[in-house]
Image 1: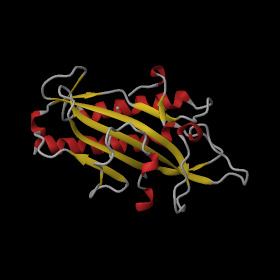
Image 2 (image 1 turned 180 degrees about the horizontal axis):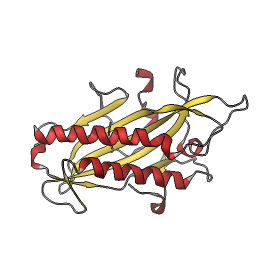
Image 3 (image 1 turned 60 degrees about the vertical axis):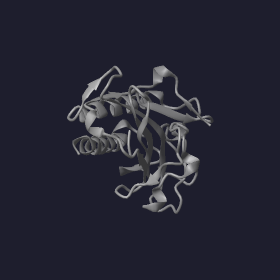
Length: 219
């Protein structure tokens, strides 16, 4: 089971895989209502996604961007850097709105021709590039910094996001995805994770989602 951080620690919104990077079922947060429909993306590594068939995407000109949720494990410790989590969610929502505004009118209310985007960051952890199976470290541990008795060793940041798009009026599921991405640089375990470490992943997701939706509505 997972739990959401209290509302005051949440801000912000979504989408998208080397085979050993793919998110396994034991890492699913429960944010998405149906994981059984997800399929490995033919385009993106580390991504499982679903797009509802027969959707007339061209009728959508507006989009609502819900606040990004940060979902933590039930065993999350109390020393989690909540300030960093807020910054991550804030940055992601801002990026999503900025990128999506190039194609859609970003609105706050449901209505005809309006998509609703709902997203959660479900894991932030550090792991070694050469690990055969990535070590899962809950968000609470990763953002406070992890050190091993053997001394400092470099790891790379991994971030998992789950997201879905629904019709804002009917609530019908139009698309959903779960994705794992890696940070650009190695991180010394003795250092705490910073927003600058996570930001490139958030920017990548926002760019990719914006581009994908633009292609769908213009078909």
